[in-house]
Length: 482
Image 1 (tube, rainbow, N blue to C red):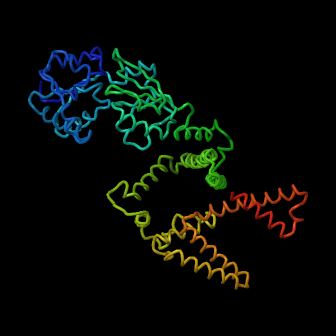
Image 2: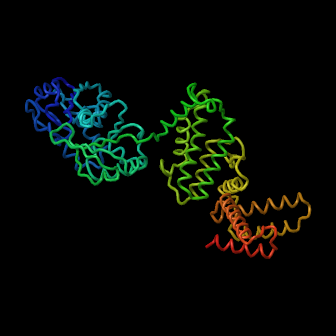
């Protein structure tokens, strides 16, 4: 055998699945290196060559990445020998085999030839066991999923998770999957696919880490019972905008959608005020509809696409969180916000001094905008020394307002008083906009209660004396606080 690396796929486990080409390679080889002996074919290699394995490295390596790099480095050295090397891996060489990718790139750099001998992967016997089609199937590695916070999967398409080899991995995978799949979602644990001892265990996702699993275990995730991915939603909106869609949706433009975007934003805020999660779920969907509609219109006009929108905000978040995705160390939220502003200024350059307030929309409600402006100014040092200073300023603003006689001056002083109140809200860590919305809702509820009590007594509210109104108001106020 000339100087080269031959990488052979051992198949999913049953020796009957070994290919004719692989059988011939083993019969002619004097020695074979296995990534692991933990494979049913390892003890039944044709030709009985001398067998080596890298199992001892599994115990000493600090991580799987280090393990795979060590194996690849050793095989590159072995392949450079005059007799080359035969390396055998479970399944197919290019399906869930990290070492093979490292060997291929290293061999290319060294000018070392590599021969790939195909093998049946773990996928084919699983397809047969589950009686499913491979088209549209997503394949993921359990170790990758275990490291993710949300799975990089489309829940509207079936998925196969490989190498679910321990309960700990199964537990980590479950936690990741629960970010988009419901706990009761029915999945199937596939054990020893293609072997006589093959098992299929359907179970709810929440029970995944209660199963006994091993290195020949995979997980099948069927699609969600109803479409729920952003990809499916984009297709629906594109359909509505198509010639076969809805006339109203086709007529919309960025400008015509402005009032709807604002309305849906306020509906979300109203749901938050009510602390109603069912309502919030619905209103967030309505708001998302507006976002995707704008992205679809932009796509049709060759302005930008949804991946560009998402990609740009992802890059921005990574760039502005160097303490998470980089090497920066911070102490506390204050330093994080200062770094955020510095990064933003670096992004925007020195175009104008007012960049401190850039991004605070003039379309915001007055209270919300005032609080946002105050927060931005505070990040660069324009802030009150303490809350006592704000209380003193409130007293001064109130006195100035009481002393004002001219309507224009009164409006000016009232504005200053309101802005100082917003500053106090920020210091108290209270959202001024939400606080006023909630206070307005309480006021409305108390007025209705007074009206109801007056009518129940056979009178109209306007017929009540000021003292009677005050008494009814106090009773309504006490009931609302109970």
